[in-house]
Amino acid sequence: MRKKCLIQALGVVFLAVLVSPAVFAQSSDVDQRIADLQKQVEALRAELAALKPKPAEAAPAAAANNLVASSTPAATPAQPNPLAGISSVLGGATISGLVDAYYGYNSNHPVGGTVTTPFTATNNQFSLNLIELALDKTPDKDSPLGYHVGLGWGQAMDVVNNSDPYASTSSWTKSAQFLKEGYLSYLAPIGKGLQIDAGKFVTPAGAEVIESNGNWNYSRSLLFYYAIPYYHFGMRAKYTFNDKVSVTGLVVNGWNNIIDNNTGKTGGVSLALTPNKKWSITENYLFGPEQNKNNGDFRHLTDTVIGYTPTPKLSLQANIDYGREMKWLTTGHSADWSGIAGYVRYAFTPKLAFAGRYEYFNDHDGWATGTQQHMQEVTTTIERKVATHMISRFEYRHDLSNRDFFNNSGNSLVKGQDTVLAGLIFVLEPNESK
Image 1 (cartoon, one colour):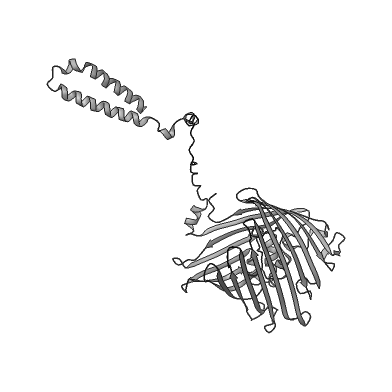
Image 2 (image 1 turned 135 degrees about the horizontal axis):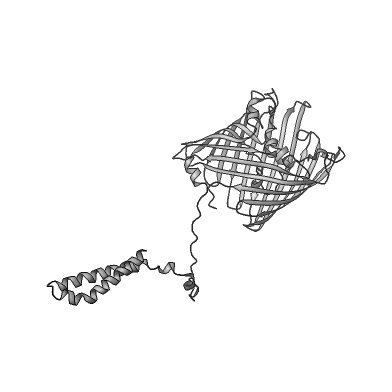
C-alpha cells in the first residue's frame, strides 16, 4: 500500500515538473520552487529504493544460477537451550533425567518369571528399569552452597533401597524409597576449595553405576550387586589438587542404610589419579562395623578401578574387589569374598559401539550370595544411538556357577543361565543444546 502511494506521489511530482515552466514563469521564485521539487523527487526515490529486496533476500533462482559457490559454509543458527528457562527460574540449577525400559528373555524360563540377576529381574516380558529425575546446583567460589536431589522409580530403585535392613519397618526408610540421592553441598574456602556433602549419596566403590546409560553393558556386573554397597548416608569431603589428583574421605552410617543398625560409624577414603589422557586409577577403601548391634567386628573392602584408553575408539577397564567380615555372626568366624571384572568397548562410529565384559566372583563363605560358590559371567552388548536423546542396546549374557544357584522352570536350581536383553534408554542431560 505504501509503495502504491509513493508511485502516485511520484506521478504528481512528474506532472508538476512538466507544467512548471508555464506556471512558475510569472513568478519571481521559479528557481527556488524547482529546487524544492527536485529535493522531493530525490526523497521519493530513496524511499522506493528502501522497499526493494536486498541482495541476500533475492529469489532462490538467482542463487541457483550462481556458478561460483562460496568455500565457507553458511553458519548454522544456534539452537535454543530447552532447559535455559527452567535453569534461570531455579537460580542456575540444572535438570537431568532418563527413562529406561527393556525386554528380557531367560533360557531357563524360571518359575514366576524371576531371574537371578537383580537389576534385570524379569523374564519374557517388557519391564521398567528406571525413571529418574535429578536437580543439581554445583557450588562454586561465587556461590558456595549447592545441592543434589535425584528421584527414581522402577526395578533398579527396588534393588537399591530394599537392601536397607530397615526397608520394611522404618517409616523414614519407606518414605525414602524413591530417593536415589539427596544431599547438600558446601564449597569451603580451603586451598582450591574443599567440597563437603551431607546426606544420601551413591558409593565411591565399583566400576559401574545404577543408571544403565552410565555403564558399557546394559545388565549390571556380579561385583556391582554382590561385592560392594550401593549407597551411604552421612558426610563426605572431596579435595581436588589438580586435574590429575583428587582425594575423598567419608564418614557414614554404614552400607545401604539411612538408619544405622548399630552405634558405630563407617569410614572410607577414595584416591583418584589421572596420570595422563589414557590412564585413570581409582582406589577405594571402606571400613567399619556393619552387623546389627555389633560395633566391635569390622567389615573391610578394597576396591580398585583401572581405566585405559589407547585410542579414541578403544577403551579398556578392570575392577578388582576384596572384602572381609572380621567375624560373621552367622557362622561365628570371618567371611571373605573377592572378584575381578574386565571390560572392553570399541566405538565403530559415534553412534555404534560394541562392549564386552568378563567376571569371576568367589563367594568363599556364602556371605554375599548365601551359597559358597565360584561364579563367572560373560556379556556382549551392541549399542546404537538412535537419536540425540535415545540409546538402544541389545545384549547376550551367560552366567555360570560351580553350584546350583540359578532359577529353573522346574522350580529348582541349576548351575547356569543365558539371558537376552533389548533395552531402550531416553536420556536428558543438563543444559543440552538440542
